[in-house]
Image (cartoon, rainbow, N blue to C red; front, side, top):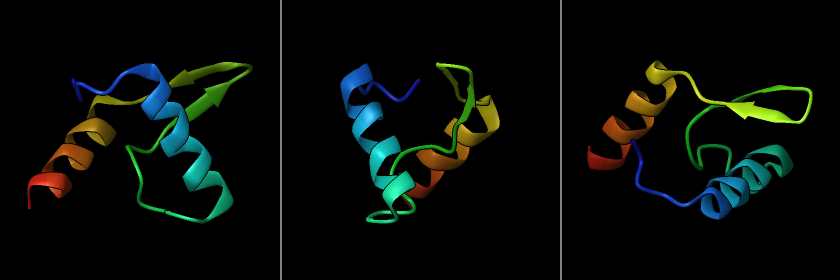
Length: 51
């Protein structure tokens, strides 16, 4: 949905976790080693990018 490769999303998650860019990328949930993005989080991220 975002058009970003997995590597870019991983960088965004890292920036969020370290506090360097708390609004980088969509919000995510980790279950074990897997990363999930809700549709609502991705839509909110995309709406914020355009606005």
